[in-house]
Length: 150
Ligand SMILES: [Cu+2]
Image (tube, rainbow, N blue to C red; front, side, top):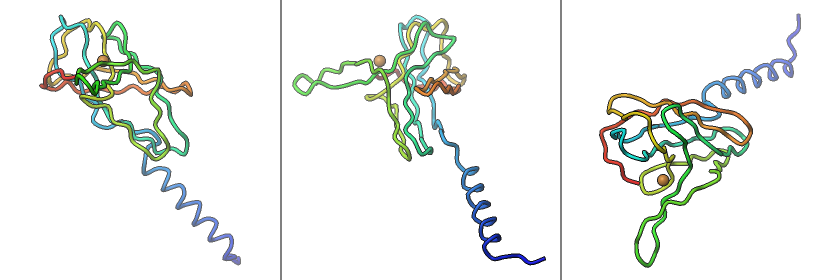
């Protein structure tokens, strides 16, 4: 049997491509968390970093969770004159290929409206992220002892 160099290099390159595809998820959610709060608060906030390793943009359009009446995507903006913070509802968040998008206090957050029970530090809360292509990703958000700071 004769191994032709061309055939061998093709097998090698397929192998390398296969390894590359396995080492990183197309979509990775890092550090998902919410600050602890009693059930009497009217809203909580969820934070995370979404990393898009795919070759196309991903667009977050909604989120849901069984513990909340509804979830909205918000951005906190500071008015330049007064310095007053306002939250503005966003229809979507676009994460470009190869980029990460951070939800953090003072910026974008998931607004978790009318929680049905208290969020206790040490526990976790499941939220499902919904993307424009119809894909969904359910993520456990760690509840941390931290004050709610939008
Ligand atoms: Cu908000």
